[in-house]
Length: 462
Image (cartoon, rainbow, N blue to C red):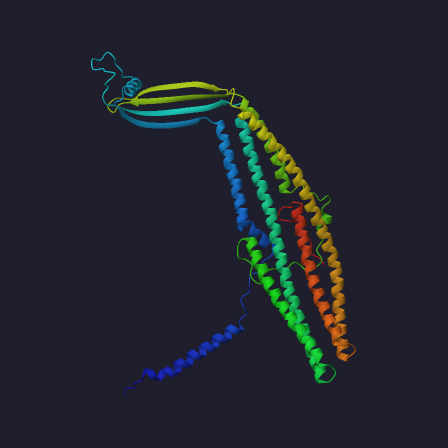
């Protein structure tokens, strides 16, 4: 007996199996932990910025360009060689006459010789040339010296750009953490107000509180939720600004690893004599004075003569002849006696630029000294704020706890609870701000003294 099973009989079972698979997949998706954002530290942010920031890349290329300029300046110390080749055809009498002389084939006794009608003449020529500067009054040496200074200047510019970028990233890092801390503060405040609102509603239903208590807490809750929205927007902007400083989108939401939330050690005590001597900007300004002095000496050397050696080996032939060679060699000297006061004008200009560089160095030092003083005062102020905000936060937390207990028993009205909650929120915001402002002030002091990355990490304590 043969049994025939139709395919339609399996459709209900197939649909049931597919539904079961979809349900299992959905359950597993809900039970699996969410994908974690890769955490990143301040050191990693700074290292990434030093590699990927376009400004640092541009400064590094300027260093390479200055090295290339130095290589060009050194070319004056080497002889210059050249090679050339040409093919010429003419019926010009004078040109044909000179071609014949160069080939050493000129025969004026030839009956067919007619200097006025040489006919069509062709010539192939190959030449090797050499030129070497023997003496130019030291101008070549001065140009090479200026090129060396250019390398050092570009390096100082790169160091200054790195120093500024390191602080910019550190500032953005702490600003992002501070913005994230504000979000957490307002989230905690919302939870605290909701707890107080639950208590007020309970007391209102029991007849122990007024309806205005509930309404006032609801208003305060709405205001705090609005502050939370603004804080979340500020946090997103802080993340975007940090990624812009780094030069790549490597920081995601809630991906920064905060430092130990303790009192950081004071870096200013580690500096015996804080000064700006290590600032690349000051070193560059000092080197610029040397460059301008070198340019002034270079301008004065223009009054001296120049002496050069030259030589050339030439080979000439017609298409059907063999090559005939000839050479020329010699020494040439040049001394410009009068140039319409161009050299004296160049000297006056170089002297003025030297004086300008000296004045710029003085101005730079004063500005950097002021910058260092400002950074030190900000660090000192931030350290004092840390002590004050910590004490205020402890007092505000104790006051809120006590006020909520008293309100529960009816000993105080809703105004006292609202004031205590507002004081707690303000204390939390100031405490978080003071902590990250202190870390930012430390980073700013490192920048102000020209402390190059990597910094020596201070021990974290609070």
